[in-house]
Length: 394
Image (cartoon, rainbow, N blue to C red):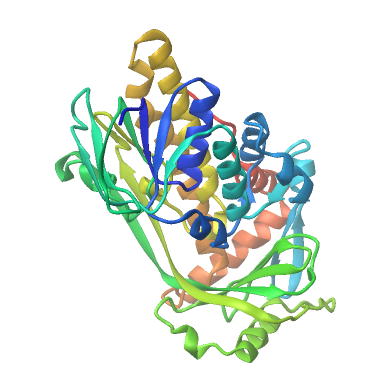
């Protein structure tokens, strides 16, 4: 089997890259270890930067997003039982916070690849990369029937997440990995209920962080800061609601609307960066190269930025035969990655209660929140980072 670009992973990075390459007349094949049903059925968060929304529309896959997405003009920071609205729309000259779940983005991209007769192998196994340091790399894998295949390609895009097989193929001596593990996690729930607020609420409370988000008019997503080692069995529905009411309470009588909880789980939080994001003919994108805590809403958006740079480099290569731009892939991407890591770390440390902190550090945290919500310059910086820094290709 032969293609120009072999893509490992049918998550946001892999599907967006394949669609971008298709628009440029470049062939690709996607290999994915999950079934299509699993991909579309895994409910994930989805706060999209303006640039990601623009990219979806540019690729012709944004119709449903524009119809069903939630377009917010801002979000709220809540602390000391008071809400403080950040007017992103006004601060960024007309941009929006778009809430459209990741699994819905994936459905739209999968439909587009299917309509374009793009080749995707689902439920593959035993994926192995060979020859990434040569001009003839290949991917060995078994299809969903267990039959062995060899995919020969010009380039390999590792879009297979943190635990995928791509990153370990960069020699350990050639890569630097930077990681921070946070001493708290998120307990996330999905609830059948109408929205309690028109926009997202990020709450700092003495008992821990809470986040109120939305998925649809009838399904809401809420999070609580918990010990990452805590068992979900310790959290009854009553305990979850009690904690959410306490952490989201305000002096102006805010009412949190309850409903049946139909999904809940605890996830740990970390920051991670792999440098470089390329080796030979292998290029990493998305979670294979970097992880951000979800507080800054950057995960999917960083993947979208990565593949735009990668697609431009591949288009340049096939048009001119020159690899100069591709050779700078890591350099270009990592500038944005580290800014997003900084912002995600900033939001996480500012909004969560860290029991290792002294009373001095807690006071600094509250001063930061006060400054962000009382200074236009600080609010502008927050809004600019939240909605997405301008895309940089150089």
